Length: 479
Ligand SMILES: *Cc1c(COP(=O)(O)O)cnc(C)c1O
Image (cartoon, rainbow, N blue to C red; front, side, top):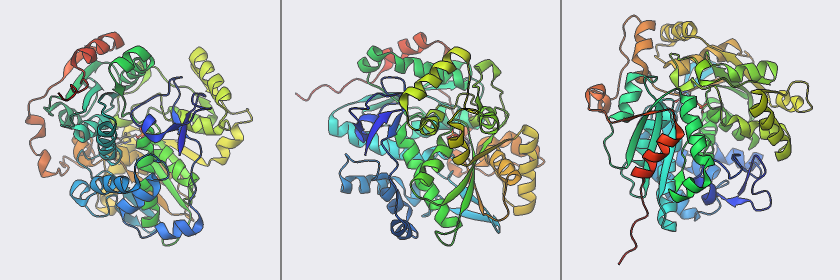
């Protein structure tokens, strides 16, 4: 499999997987996408049902990773997806709530959110490729709460990697903040930015747009624009489908709490690969840019100042970076048309697909959407606890709220549990009358540990100066 950019780069020179692994953006500012989505035949799909998670992961990922030796890739995947790291041999277990309604639990990794599924793999892939090529990388990323800790834990102590993680100061839950800032390792740098997640993401984009800086400091990315993350997430939709259905002739709807559109994009890719998913339901919180798009055809990202701080903070995103990959497909993979839309976006702050020839593709893609508010989350957490004796986190509650509202009784619904409630104690206490969510023993004294972060203004130049001063450098050649 080779990769092109959504904006046209590499069209005549598609890149191998290893070339796009460490990068966020293509040189033209677009995102790497595979030349096509490989499709499993009916027979192949039948053979996948019943396979263990690591085998499933190998089956999916080997279609996207053509330049890592097959035996090595199998070993990397087997080392990543273990019961020791993810809490159970199923890795992403499906639990039924009632007939026709189930949860896909993808949040049982080391940092208690689904980001671990992809980032634990990325840690292994980075180490492998960097060692093979004698390189090092400085990861510059932005987090709205969960990517940061998942990336830092995945890269902890890896000697060819340094991590510079930008987080919006004071906008994460105390647990999320402590999960990152309490890490104390020379290759981990927490940068607390005076701004929103979107401001952090804009700084990362600005750094990536500076080609000279990027190559001088070997800048890499682990943000959700990283294709390898999307590919890793595709795997659990296969596991989830097989866990929630009895045969491959059963359609399944999925509801996904969404922010940067990475998780639900993985569901879309899984469906394109032949998995019999039907509707893809996008749940947003009060930051409802994606809901507005799917309802009206108008894509209108908001400024950082218009982004609400909510009780599902990992979805407080108003510029869904992965959305460009989806739009690329909707315009028939025409990079010129895609570029024209993004030019309009830069000029007018929005574009509209309704009323264009592309809208039929959007409708055919069978995305549905809805929005959830703080009151909805509180009510959903309460209802789920009463009905099913299960405490869900606020993001999962957004997904359940929207999923239930759009549920079609004739088709089973799988809702993705994106984090564990331990990360968001305040809203759990509010919803359940002071109940403190269970937390794994490793996290018992988390907030009491000393924290390490450097405060910086939302200014790309200041962040660059910090990165330049603290970057990992190529190891000296052996004497
Ligand atoms: C990251 C995150 C989301 C949003 O996922 P996207 O892939 O950005 O759409 C939702 N819930 C939780 C808990 C998250 O950490």
